[in-house]
Image (cartoon, rainbow, N blue to C red; front, side):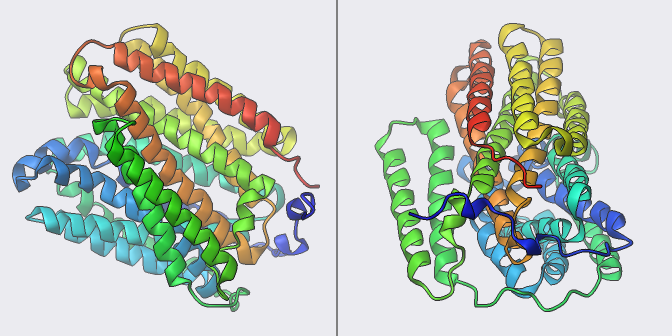
Length: 467
């Protein structure tokens, strides 16, 4: 049996920056805006869907894929993107991903039919899978020590706030120039970021990782992730115990098993699957899944509650989610500043308990005010958990593994988003159909229970930080 302590021991090469880059904080700001754009694009489309459906004549299935096609592609290809960052250099992939994302957004904005807009969304997902792990890898390699924790706090705050800001921006753009602008706005932002980063990012030495891209491994894990996420999304509409859901979950399990076997036998694997059982990485996975699922449950339940039951318009609904964006950024920044002093276990557990308390408010007290206060408090907790997840998973990896572990963390971020939407949809089915608000209360109660259970798990599995 392998030594369990050995896999958690930090590599001496984790600290490669004795002389930090003088523009590292400006670069962090640019990378944070890029990550914000990617995460924002998960929710910014939500409030534009009704107008998009009418203008393009989309059916229900196509409308669903406008949202899930981006998430599936983004999550399914992240491991490949992380490995590519290690092999070809994070700098090159960040610039490539930005330009591809801008081009795909232009295609989606100009779409005149369902297949064209789906093509744009899938291309956006591919670009996001290239860009996201490469950007996080750059953050890890540009900063060191306590500065790295603060940098991850800023990066996570911007990315975590993207989902909430997406709801607000989606309402503003849809009510103003039209739904196409939820895509068009990415074009100038992506081009400006690419130019600014090209001028500021230092030329990097040849990547230390060796090998080739594992295409078959990427196909297997993408197919497995796609099948599992599709099963979760479908279960929200058709039920968890149907034969189709069981077959999809079973197919995902077989594909994951085939992926593991292939990774253990191929000469150039996509990843070392033993990475997943390292305590820091395993802790990061648990935290990122739970935090993202809770965040998406808040948006999913809150949006339907405000628009269907309170009859608020998309713009007013977006404004009501502003406290979620502010609280997420505050929680993430505070966690980034104190995690070095109190350790990831304490900060992670406290963040989850704060999230549970916030979710419990709308479960117990009815009314829009209780909803706004509760989801704001919950967002502060999940913002802190996002930082702990990234800092724990990435804090003890060697530079040549940073892209891979970033891809793992980001993959499970997308998995958590799909899981949260599916669970919320299933539990709150009656309220989503317009019958009372009990379903919303049940959904928030479930979220609070999940957060408490996750806090107990985190207290047990989080490793002590290395000195």
